[in-house]
Length: 248
Length: 369
Image 1: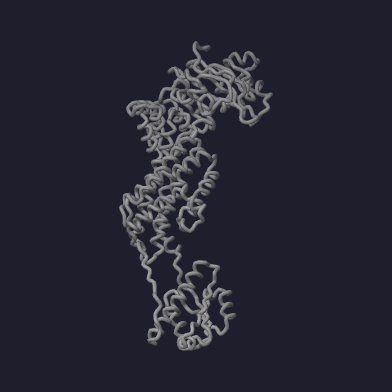
Image 2 (image 1 turned 90 degrees about the horizontal axis):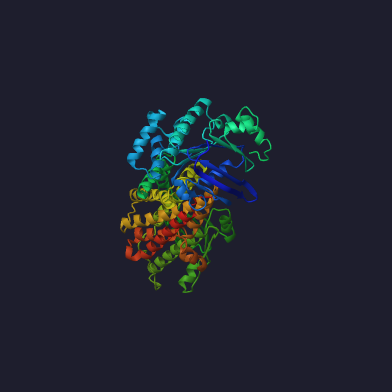
């Protein structure tokens, strides 16, 4: 699924912390509406790369655009057009489900009316209308993740960045989470997702695999399996990542 | 849209504050405890001064001097000794604070128009007790002498001075302490809470969720400062109620002057708190940093020791210590009933510090690493 125009485009992006090069000269593009899997072992530099794309961290060198804005100079503009959900799913534990959704949507400039309509939709699709006034810390992990995804996509961003969104939940819950991702993608949202679950990689349109700060492979799951003569993405990952120097 | 954002952020802060297991209790319980206990225990009033008397005269007068000392409110005689060494031993083992020595032939010399001298020695280890003890004992002995001479119809009375303490006529230490305690409470509560709040968001990861949104950093920092206006006003209100209900102390001046100063000073402290939080990665770091500020604030702002008795160079430094102005305002409004016209310089200084620290808090807040 090669796309016409890239929504994320990165050239020679590098991030150094002192002598340590976390992200080393990566170059890639992500097309509009794509589900892009961003894989790599622990410490490969995935999170650092995402943080640069989202305007949370300054690149040491290199250039790129996200949603048409420059990652060096227009970080705050980028933030208006993206959604972000991290592995810590970053909701306020002592606020209710509704308060969290309202907080983030208001910050993204939605009006109270828009928020109400959208939130009602979210509650119905997720089947969590009865959890509306529950504190986030009281609801199960799987629900929290869905809620965090909802909070990151309520304002219909161009791109949503998901940093290990499904850590720690069972396969059935993960499966349902991916249904949400597909639904968002079908509405034209671009999904940029990191994961450690290689079965999830199979769901992506294209996958990149990072090793020690470099992108070692980038193609559709089918092409990668063919290229490495592997039956599953799991095998592909093992072949590519086996030479990794950095672990954790 | 910015107003909406600020409103929802404030709603978030207040909700989180109310739901915290600790914060509402701290805001109410801490002022109550501090205001109830500290004025009772922290006092510079010196009572119970023990006097050892070495009476070498054994006259009617010498016995009367000792009896008057024993009868006075703050002094009591722990023992009469024959020799100075014995009295000194009493001081050394802690049973006496002051030694009064009455020389031989004191009454006789006095009657003959000579000028015999009483000898007072005080234990200087506890400076306050020693100084005041010697003064009290001297005053008591002088009183006895004057009365004696009056009765004999003999001597001319030396001119006496009388002192009237304005604004705090009984020199009650509590009147001095209660406004200062409110200052301490605001220093601690409005200094620590915003720091812990923000660093807590760092540790929980929610700060990242905020930084990745388009929220303006000034609006965000403002949402971290404004709640502590309310906290500061609450604390001072609790303090004033206890000051009135328990100690009968009512501000002489306008209560709104106190609230205005509290508002400004809460902003000073929370601005400092946010600045410290911006520079700390962990709760522990932030606690140590804010503690360092609080110690300096408490010791150098004139809370406990008057600024006028500091060395000159230290007095210059106190101009840079914001609570100095808040304390001056609190004491002046509380005890003297000063008005804005008297205190505009202090208010201007507080306003300056509040603006400066808020700006520093906003500038040092980084959405991007």
